[in-house]
Image (cartoon, rainbow, N blue to C red; front, top):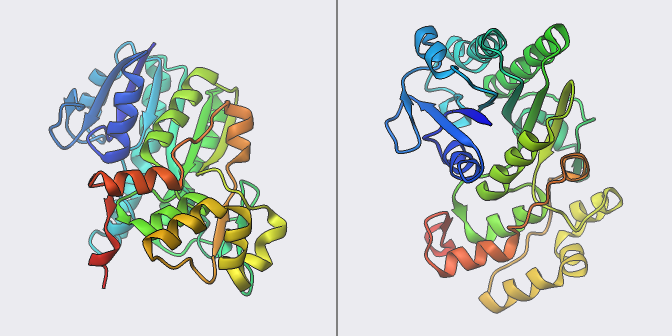
Length: 293
């Protein structure tokens, strides 16, 4: 199977490229020259996209402006790159005979809906987004466009809404792996599972680490997260104690990825313990907490 990955020079796009190239014929496109970018240029370049789409079976679309771009580029740029280019890529893919479109989205688009007042938010695919920024709005708009295209052209579209996935301080990252974080390697594997499953129609999944918590824990997680974490995941409580770190007093949200696990046959494996291993190995994905203050 031949797969085109957009944004293949980025952290997530590169991880997906490297994971999939083991079992599939993969090509990448990005504006930044890179060993995982077989085509260098803008995804809005119709000529370049036409060339890149030759004999492609599946598109994995990760290229986008992200939250750090808010305030640095115009809202018009977000519309052009995140929404219009996504629509045009899907339509070009249909014209080229693509059989499946996978869109890398974000859990951030749930916005205010993920953090209700006075209780920890439990976020699954049934939660209605309440976007905060143009970034969130552009991702919602892109998903909506893809759903319309999927319905109109009978194109299988899989949207993978990935949770927090970038280098940050070890104590935060470790706790987030229980609630609202994910390793790039698990994200890559989720894309592989989506490719191989190729569900019919339009499907949308949250991609986040496995959580030991349930919806019934939400009030307690907001009021006394330290106690609940120690009860539900004593291993992280012990590890934090050994390192002299404090567990958080409250948690604002938990992302539920059980639907992706059940329907895609995907299982995240890089939990809080992998964060500590990367920290001890001085891998740049994790920041030492001593540098934060």
